[in-house]
Amino acid sequence: MDLFRASARKRRVGQPLAERMRPKTLEEFTGQGHLLGPGKLLARIAAGKTLPSLILWGPPGTGKTTLAHILATRVGARLSPISAVMSGVKEMRELVQEAAERRDQFGERTVLFVDEIHRFSKAQQDALLPHVEAGTITLIGATTENPSFQVNAALLSRSRVLRLEPLGEAELLLLARRALADPDRGLGGTGVEVSDEVLGYLVAQSGGDARRMLTALEVAVTISAGSEGGAGGEAGADGGGAAPVLLTRGIIEEALQQKTLLYDKAGDEHYGVVSAFIKSMRGSDPDAAVYWMTRMIEAGEDPLFVLRRMVIFASEDVGNADPQALSVATAALASYRFIGLPEGVLPLTQAVVYLACAPKSNTALTTYAAARRAVKEHGSLPVPRKLRNAVTALDRQMGHGQAYKYPHEFEGHYVPESYLPEVLEGQRFYEPSTSGHEAEIGARLAAWRTSAEGQAASREPGAAGAEPGAAGAAPGAGHVPDRRHPPR
Picture 1 (cartoon, rainbow, N blue to C red):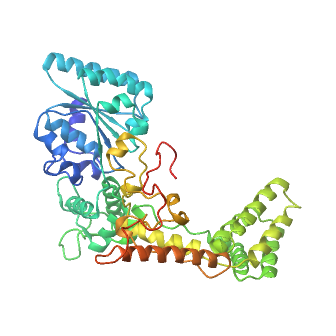
Picture 2 (cartoon, helix red, strand yellow; picture 1 turned 90 degrees about the vertical axis):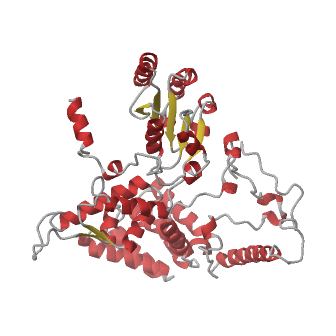
């Protein structure tokens, strides 16, 4: 059976695209230039034959498992993988025993790769420690969680922690094009055609995750081939071979499972009444709003359905023009759950009238939509180091929290600062309306923004004035709060 499995593995039977395209060498590896560039840590390790224990910390699809395989091969060690989710102390001890026998009998080194090491309990991590200390195994752990909190301090002190970053769009594009062109491991023999625009959309939706991108690409090809009779299937009318497999944005969306689900069309009248109810509240007509609400309740509609729509409306259509609206809607929900029908219609009616008569603003909706467009366009941008919490020595070593300005140490509890990722600096997602309480919010926000623009202008070369941040700063400004406490 081992012979058959080895043959199937060699022929890549059943292997997904992401596994088939897994880089075999550092030269083929894409991304993580801060670790693999000339003179960087992993480049120096790979150049020699000494591999220290490592904790590879980063989001999914950034190459943690691939790096473990490549590094073990590079130093001539055997890689013994184990999953913290599927394995326990017993399996781990067996692997360690086998590693000890190979070392003693053949002088062969073993790299124990623990995937999702943050899932190991303290006891399981403690069981690893003596074998790492004795050199029986070299540990490479992979984790998506901060190892400062999830890995024992003793194990951390005997390992190098390496932070892997999400792959950039250029790196993902390179991987996608490589997979589309490779006739052996990739999709080069399937006749796939995809525009730069569609491929760029796929990359943008992948969030820096190479595995997710390659999996979606493979699913998209399968969907497209199936809808066209299969890749490599019927020849064209001119006998020129199989028709090409064309990937569209719609197919990519389906592969990513992000298509919007529609309501059942059999409920047209039901949803027509709901629509009239919401539009009446939005139009500030309490009489019509109460009428349509009563139509639904008397027809046997679940009052909780109506209340959910009201809670949504309180944020979507009233928002900060009257912040009390959300409290009224949620109080009506709690009241109904407490008293039920028939008296429960009273808090419903009170809340509907309040919402209909409240000043209106849809900035909760427009603000989220604007922020969502930025997220969709740019993907998972890294959090600026100054905004990361410096809880542990490792965090501080990585520069977390440095240069952060604590607003409460400045006059008015405000200091001009940028909290967005660098590529989004200066973008405005929230533009307050002039309705109700939001007009007051808008005036306050405008004053802050004017202050920020004034200080930015004073920092320009040749501008007169004090050093940046000096004006209005309270004594001790620039002090970094004790990060042992929760984030503030």
